[in-house]
Image (cartoon, rainbow, N blue to C red; front, side, top):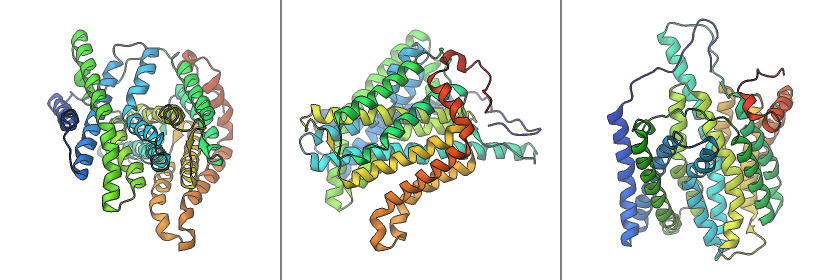
Length: 439
């Protein structure tokens, strides 16, 4: 994000607010402890209280996990960082989704839809809220800085990704193309799992060849990073173990309490699981991305969410049928009803539009508003459409996404071949050093 003309605004270099960062870590740990104690002691909480206690525990642990995982990058190689950190970053989402997938092995009619609900909600939040958040927050910060500096000329507020991130875009494109076939099926089968997990493995192998880089620590992660190496490794290891234990122990009661709360108060369990649970699990990633955007480090902010999207749209989706079968479900795979197929179609269509936007490795403010607006439209369209069409809002929005995606690819067609070449063929170590290809 670079302004035109005389204005050049960089993220301000400031001394870390250590006391504030330590307080944030303490609050996150404090939020996690009650759920851990309740789970360990076997306390039987009322359903609403259980939802709050275990939900806060998952949120608090997810923040600790994200901060410690960032600091871990100081002490591991690039390849090991990829293998370990990619899984750590999405552990909260995996834990909740695996809980529903495992329960679906014994009761597919009740829990299979919930496993898909949590997965589709999390994926759509990343793109529909996370990506626009980075663009719009950074644009606002840039304009404020310009106004304070007395600059009145045009400002380039597009967010651009560095060339090495073509890899994530390319593999997200491949996963998205395959995901568009899933709504045509009656279940997520084991061979779907094999293809999606293989895509993630190929992505992991390619990205692992990237040269090691000094990580940019943001917020409370700086507290861990500032420790002497030996002490940092111990503290980070303990933080990761604590957070993982909380998430593993509290994910199941959190999921169960959501279901029970919905049943008790007549609230759609599906909607609770689709939106409330992902909000808890995705909150740290959104906060980290927002912190990068606030500092005008938009490349890292958007890349963080893009990497998570690749992870969830390949490895998470691919492992759901595996967990289902291991838990005793039918060997043919996780069943999909009509609603689930529509949800997957909508999620895949949103992903297709997002990839089409990123063909040029950039997002404009207009495109950010389109991502946010279409995401919000799914919540209001049902009340606007005639009664006979209210069950078609997901398909309607999916078609809009797909039409826009085709239009974006056609408009940016000169970028497609260079992007695919960089994603799959150009040696990774050369991407950061070679000049931009002609388009």
